[in-house]
Length: 143
Ligand SMILES: [Zn+2]
Image 1 (cartoon, rainbow, N blue to C red):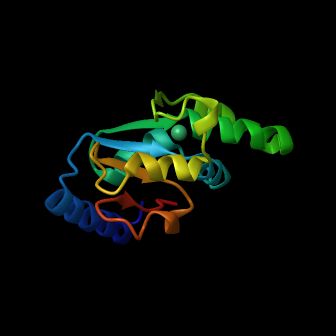
Image 2 (cartoon, helix red, strand yellow):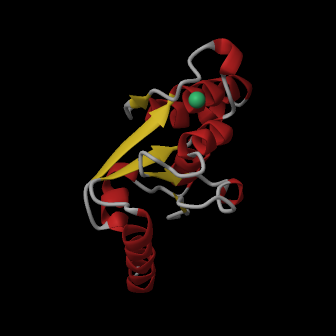
């Protein structure tokens, strides 16, 4: 990782640590779009996320993200490798397990963060604009 990018990451993490209580080990939610982009750019998520955060991270995903990606992989077979990688991470219960409340991956992650982000999650996804208007959220792309 470039030094300039590392300094920027440190500054952002320091801001969130000071103002919103984010502390190591950071809990990171993964979305299928982020994993797809990491595969495209040949980024190893397990290696790079701890380097980026400068601390231990716990990487989890949700059943909604996984289900969305499985549906997309049926349409586009090139996403099967993304699906395989995302399945390697533990699932966090998002509360949308019932089929009636199943949501798209980005909306699921947004609902996990809520307005106050009580569980202090960081969210890694390519669709960052969905998350920025809300307070107390740590969302940016490392790629
Ligand atoms: Zn969900």
